[in-house]
Image (cartoon, rainbow, N blue to C red):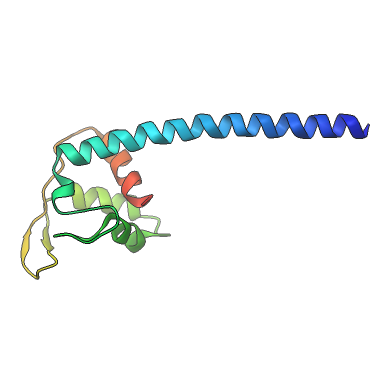
Length: 116
């Protein structure tokens, strides 16, 4: 009976790791798509993942919305509305609007930003 329990435990662990690696691959593909969309729209001209450029770092944006139920919705609004934004030098300009109508791509980009 003890042998059976160990065998079951080992099998469950192997299955869990297999599922985790599949999920990880899917996240990488989504991250690649999000980064490609950000690059295509020149987001990295003003933003970087870790450091403040003309605009806040993606990590700072993610921290701002961390734990908020409407965080993803607010990020999507910010990247699609063209609202005025205050830059690190104190000036203001219209935020560039992401050039896509694909809701899934926008949601993926927002999720990637919030994962930083």
